[in-house]
Figure (cartoon, rainbow, N blue to C red):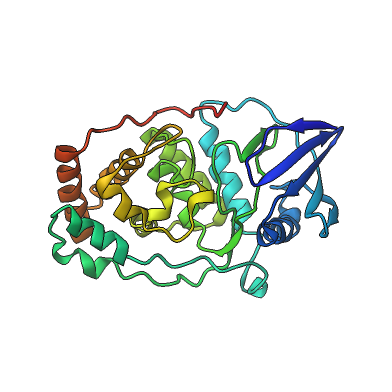
Length: 297
């Protein structure tokens, strides 16, 4: 078998038309991935499970074909996400962990630490469970997607959960918030991708609230292995750190810029994001964000 490159959480081999993956150290991640693969098999959006060895946390899957992605890959990506999200419904409650509702308090402490006025925004930072049972990938990042003649497919579902698919669709607006690579999707492509998603699902919904949820999440400033309960928004007040394509402060500034544009739907939060962005631009050095997808070497 040929050993393939993988993250620190797994070992992956190619064996002809099969992929062999062993999850290291995290039994919950192994269970999540196998469960999600089986729940989504009927969608054709994930590789089929061929064999499972729970004792060694090893799963054998079909090897998906992979073609170079086109400049408009985000349209296939969004359409594929819609199909993946529709794999589950209320009848699958309990099959996977529930998506967590963001806690706005660390973000509010961060805003106060930068001496930025919160104003009326606190009333727009009361989040609730949306009650949806979409099958979320958990980390739908560049590199966890593959492209075939039939469109996008997804791998590495170790963080799969049940929740609101809009929080993953807005990766295209928020620069892929849990991902090593941050990129800003051109507006025309993003709008076409969102339309493809909603056409697949048969309805359109507002996306601004899902974006605000990413702005307030400190865990979206570090890679998965570092999401250990540390208040990273408190950290970023005094230090910055580089995560592959840009820094934590660069990520925050980009996300604040997106939310600052929500003047019609979230006027108080939009105003806060503008004040916050102005303050960050004064005291921090702006970091560039790519406008094209970058490759992880």
